[in-house]
Image (cartoon, rainbow, N blue to C red; front, side):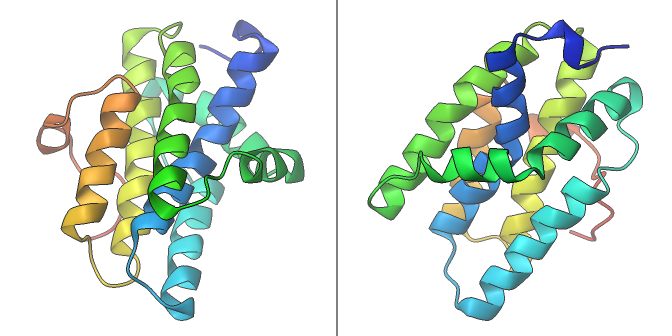
Length: 165
């Protein structure tokens, strides 16, 4: 079972910031007002607080989630926001590259589960307000690829978010 000690400080930081970058990228492309933004933030917070059973990666995801909820991680993520919405999305997705590198150190089954959890966060945030738009789906696909997955991987994985799609 993998834990935080397997990663360098930079790798762990990348993993613990990944849920925040995923959320930031989706919120940036969403068509929403203040109520929708609250719903999107709540969806992200729900999957951070209760990531669910993720097989062999459950404990690792719980540790990532715990650190992602820290003030330091949220503060560090704010420093990377771009000036325009497109720049914000691009920067957030670029930052996921370091997390993908860290995922490459994991046993394949754990890496797939962590990546799936991060993509599930993106899907939950996108779906929280008014359903997933084409633009949000395109960003979800970019997130999945940035994390080492394929754009078509979603069709092969059952929904583990507990939401009805």
